[in-house]
Image 1 (tube, rainbow, N blue to C red):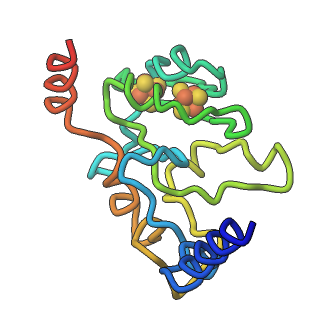
Image 2: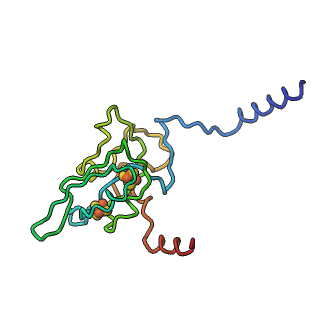
Image 3: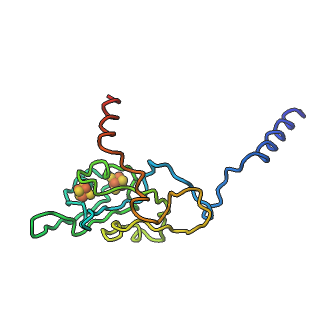
Length: 174
Ligand code: SF4
Ligand code: SF4
């Protein structure tokens, strides 16, 4: 009778003096994994031109049908997306759009503070997707660099493995 009680108290006391695992969000933030699939970002060439060529592959492969693209053409016939939207309210963050893109024009950042007060606000336009995600709740006590707003590249260093590495992995996996 007294033994289980003592066992319970011992367990409680052991947790009482052990390292705390609770994170004081938003004062502290998770250092998310490099493979985290967060908010999308459309990338540009060094020249400033958008990398996307409006091939529609991402919209076609998207299982949630949440990507919408309207293509247009430059005078030299190069296609680009006149409009490009992703409805994050429907997105399941599977990453297929990133995997399928032949131009490596879209990536997923580590940004995970994506809540909004309306469904309309979850629809990201091309202009929004070309900007790095903004940190929603600023804090001095970060656990890691995951939600840095220093620039798109630092946010995106997580996502895309080099193609060669992917091929090697799929060959090894049969
Ligand atoms: S992550 Fe998946 S569901 Fe979301 S936009 Fe890309 S393909 Fe669609
Ligand atoms: S993001 Fe990539 S896959 Fe999607 S339309 Fe642009 S080039 Fe094609």
